[in-house]
Amino acid sequence: MEELIVRPSMKTVWAGYVLALIIFIACVWAYYQYLTDKPAWLMAIPLIAFLPPLRTHIKRRLVSMRLFEGHLTVESGFFSRTRRTVDVAKIQDVTLSQSLGQRILGVGDLRLESAGESGAMAMRNVDHPRKIADLVLEVAKRAATFRTSGLR
Image (cartoon, rainbow, N blue to C red; front, side, top):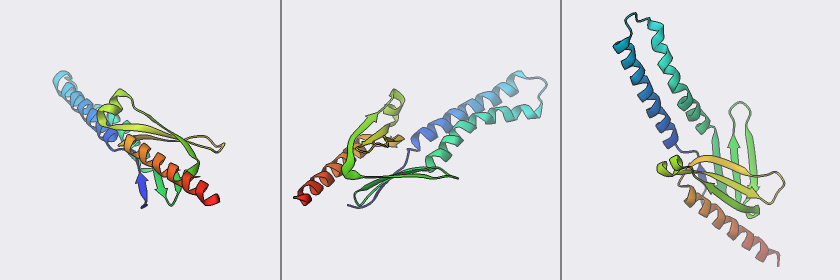
């Protein structure tokens, strides 16, 4: 099997940028429509609408899930990185959850439970979440079957 790298979707980021642009345009329109005394610094306030999607965009680039050679690795962080690697054969449960907005955009949140004590690994806003969940479960099942048959 070749390597699979999954990152959070850009769809939610672009939706945030579109919403911020709409807010910005509405604020600029209101600025020129209703204000008689127009201080220039007031135009900086609508730019605040771009901070949440920009933050989401940066966070998106800092998270990745990698499925390669029987291991699943989730990495996150910028200054301090966290890397968690699990043997695919130990994955017991893959949970997919989607809000209404996520269903409309075709993204979802994945939560992977392993047999270890360290808890679940989660990844938010993944494109084609059902396809990825099915693939992870299929690889985990194959790895567990191979391991069981190899031990006999």
